[in-house]
Amino acid sequence: MILENLIKSSPDVRIPKQIKEQSGKATPFLQWVGGKRQLLEDYKPILPKKFHNYHELFLGGGALFFELHSIYGNQKEFFINDLNRELAITYEQVRNNLDKVIETCSPMELKHSKEFYYAVRNIDRTKVSERKYEKLFDAVDKLPHNEIAARLLYLNKTCFNSIYRVNSSGLNNVPMGRSLNKKIFNFSNLRSCNKVLQDAHITNKRYQDCFDQIENGDLVFLDPPYVPESQTSNFVSYTTEGFSLQDQRELKDFFDEVDKKGAFVCLSNTYCDFITELYSKYNIHKFVVNRNLNTKANKRKNSSTEALIANF
Image (tube, rainbow, N blue to C red; front, side, top):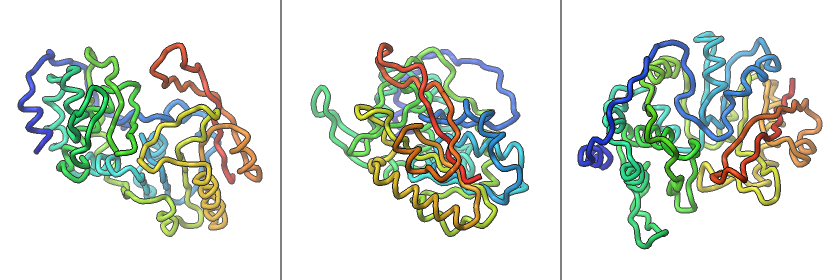
């Protein structure tokens, strides 16, 4: 009960923020770097109109999953997976234990401050110098699952640009964003997501280990960490393992095997020579999207160019 004890011992510093919450179409409850919300209308005309079941193997915010569920409902089975254990646990808790998650999150709305943010973020470490921390434990091993979910939901909504990033020790090191005056949680949408997730098989494993569940005629969407746009770019690590160019080549081999299986398969990535040459035998669609992630405003780019590679 480490997080709950921290919450209880922290003072209320905010007046409740009121928003009109309305039940309706479920939308992603997490903002995720590289999320596909702004590309959904571009993707939909490309995707096959008829397919069997749906598989999303690098789930992240799950924008395409939620969109396709709104179209097909319980007509299909949905298989969603992510290697990030903290993320997978959060999805499972929103599906299976939402009341307890909301109970944990609710008081955090009133306690949100710079001091509270860093206390929640740093719950798994101790400070040894001005810029150095020593890891005490793995939060996903020590905290109850409802606290893991509540912590991720809170940090996601209050950190800089909703980045999920961990260092080589597995410690979240994202600074707080400009969130002191905003409403943090939308529990109405969480309840809508809870209903949608009842139709989903949620797993936490390597994408390669999902191969056997894919069948002829299924639709598979792959949204891996992207290839950097330049040699100096540093892509956000969602897990401590990172994702190298060799990992990209191995993912292409997996794409080929899924294609041979007779499934519809598509993959998003940076539109660059490495990717277009790697997937040259497939259909490649090009999109320009806004991705402003740098903490320094003068280094932010207005847009980036992304590819959707498909075997259809």
